[in-house]
Length: 331
Image (cartoon, helix red, strand yellow):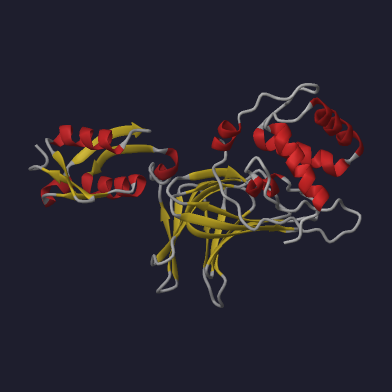
């Protein structure tokens, strides 16, 4: 990738400014160039938005780079902002800068004209939440990733894994999520999509608004889903199914809240495994029918299992990587 030297220098200058390392002369240079150079001012505003700063005009801002980096919870790769119109300002180019956050610059240099945005958002061992350039908010579950491709007239996202989307309404640019030959299209709504490579089904659950769930292959059926409805696509049979689903724990992996109302442990344990990423087993089948009423919010797994154990006189034993509930079960 070729990098223009003047752009490289501008990034380095601004990265040092937001890190509080600029001299008085450099600060004056920045103030002067913001008035005379619209491209430079756009770059400044983008970085200011990234860190949420309002630095003083005449003195270097007090800024902690390590603390600012902690605010970053996504990793974007291969981002570019193409431009095909000569009269528009030239797009900025990805480079490595001193402050160590170059991979995020393009994210906030989104311009909602005819220019576009491409990026890769990855969640590995942690849940990741971030805002796309159109103000849509995505939350990726662990071990999930998306490829983002915004161009004029379309907002396309390829998903592998599970994600919750709160889509900003834009009637001129539908928001389309793809997983293989299955797509979900919306104008503005909130919903979750579970499309894990290797799973036999793709699931869509709608919290608000309306969602179209369909295949791109010839002869595909389609579903229109509204709040508290779930659509399930069977990859092997290529069939769609709609269910009424007001499950309070549909996005518990995102909210970190678990609500159980006369819920059998046979349903509780798989959900705990999904949310906490641990293997949990019963010592006896009789334990599966125990019913619990509880509301957990931001509680560690140890506390949740302790409550379950005290309620049903069960002990938790760690056997290798598996947690085992031991006891006779319901009183």
